[in-house]
Image (cartoon, helix red, strand yellow):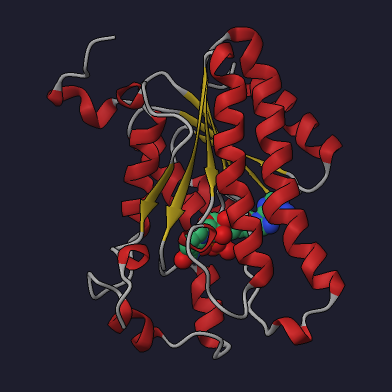
Length: 258
Ligand SMILES: NC(=O)c1ccc[n+]([C@@H]2O[C@H](COP(=O)([O-])OP(=O)(O)OC[C@H]3O[C@@H](n4cnc5c(N)ncnc54)[C@H](O)[C@@H]3O)[C@@H](O)[C@H]2O)c1
């Protein structure tokens, strides 16, 4: 496969069909905007039907209400998506929730809740994608991990464990599905100011000034910077990249100091 000419790079997803879970907010919304701007048709799966309004203005973006923890709902949503916009080329399993509380106080129900969305939901999305893409021998699957799937932090046991599971899921599926012509990679962002993070800061669970002080680049990651990485990983320019956990964390995970 020849490299994309530089002049075509801003349309490198032209003609592609993409599905993004959790695409009604934050990183998912940024990826939806970026993928659509680069020429893809995008369908968003999100449990927050009210947030579908955020997508109404985006040309080439549709919405299907779906809880990614429900296997039947995920399957039905994939069928509806393919009936609506055609065979999927790109699937991003992005929907996820935070968990930020001392482990000694964490209830089993809250542990299960984070596993259900962050692990079960990503597994069900990846499996639904693989089942449709493998027979066609074509497709790219991106799983949203986190730098906290690579390095640890206290008081986030469910989050860290679920995200490290997502990172491993990308490697295991990449190995298993390479022979079917599929690429599977994980993305590992650092701290990005999205509603997800704003909520933790507003509740006093995180200190924004302390976080930026510890960041080697001295600022939060922008949602567009994660979307740019996702668009590249989804494009044919990344045709030899599979089984990777791609970091976009401003140097946080490399920082062994302060
Ligand atoms: N914001 C960060 O700093 C950061 C850093 C690393 C990784 N991440 C990961 O990125 C992903 C998106 O995070 P964000 O910051 O954009 O969060 P967000 O809260 O702004 O958006 C998450 C979206 O997922 C949807 N969602 C949640 N549970 C769902 C379910 N069961 N079924 C369907 N949709 C569901 C929500 O409705 C929402 O639209 C998450 O997986 C998160 O762990 C975020």
